[in-house]
Image 1 (tube, rainbow, N blue to C red):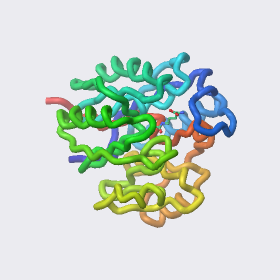
Image 2 (image 1 turned 135 degrees about the horizontal axis):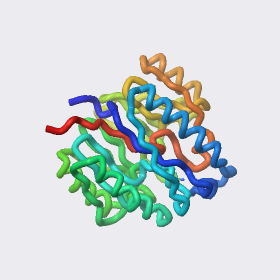
Image 3 (image 1 turned 90 degrees about the horizontal axis):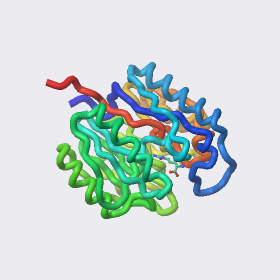
Image 4 (image 1 turned 30 degrees about the vertical axis):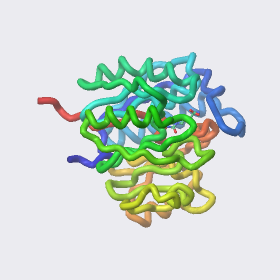
Length: 264
Ligand code: CIR
């Protein structure tokens, strides 16, 4: 089986003017539409350089957070699951994503109970880890577990630390065995059996990095994390992320990515 961080397809969505009013837990100022667009463009370029074919979806002006497509679905080589984001203003984003996924995947399953956002889901080759949070509830997690079983994937349901938006706000996959995590999340014991690289103190926000094929996208604001990853042998691609950070987002949020395997 190819590694779970090997991708050849990705979906992203152009941010609308409404992105300046995106959800945020603490208001540290609004990003600009141009700023968010620039950070997305850099990401798309890095994906292309890594050999990923990226489709850009049109603006959904009525949904300020719709640039964060990761929260709408789970995607795997074997099929996709359309989620139900727990933020009321975001539910319609998943509805809009469903027909796009049906174009790309032979098998698309729909979550019909509870709420789950993709930011709460960390997929490793062994297990799909779902973190319960203010956006992802138990009913949703249990229903997604049943859908994942249909796709042949095992699930572990865990808890996201309090006051953390998403499970993946605090962690990301570095390779099949290794997770980049904040100390507070790793301390909860959820990564038993994995190797863990901790984000340096003061750079917790670097944890939402993104492994894409042979490289790891890391925010330029986090030089100590980049050094730590480079020393551990990872090829680091530093990219600016301060605009999306104003909306509590990191690199994983901006795309849905998967390995499309030729059928038959
Ligand atoms: C939200 O609060 O829903 C957005 N402002 C940020 C979503 C970030 N998505 C992610 O971590 N997967």
